[in-house]
Amino acid sequence: MQAAADCFGDEYNRCNICNTGKCPRGITIQDPKLYRRLDSDRVAERLVEIFKAANVELKKIFAPMGRSTELPIGMSDGLSIDDKAMAERLEISYAC
Image 1 (cartoon, one colour):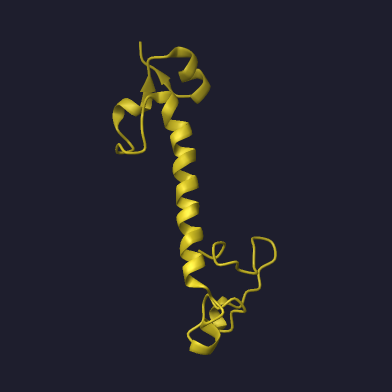
Image 2: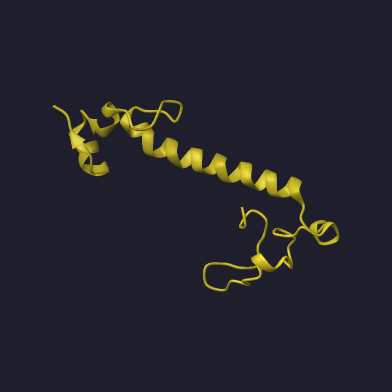
């Protein structure tokens, strides 16, 4: 959420004022005057793009196993594969 809202802080250089109510981006603000700095529509669009990108990456992982992102994760048949080369590449068990 913070990355999608263009938070000034990052994992190395945090601004560390999230809990003070004086966020320069308006992310953690309760003051209506300061809250206007946050473009919530833009943040929502960026979050959607993040989830779409994650879905694309999951499809790249699941496709070689013959799976899709529509099916529940954690099914026992997803833990092995009948293609030996692919099993070695994905480092999962090979089912004869």
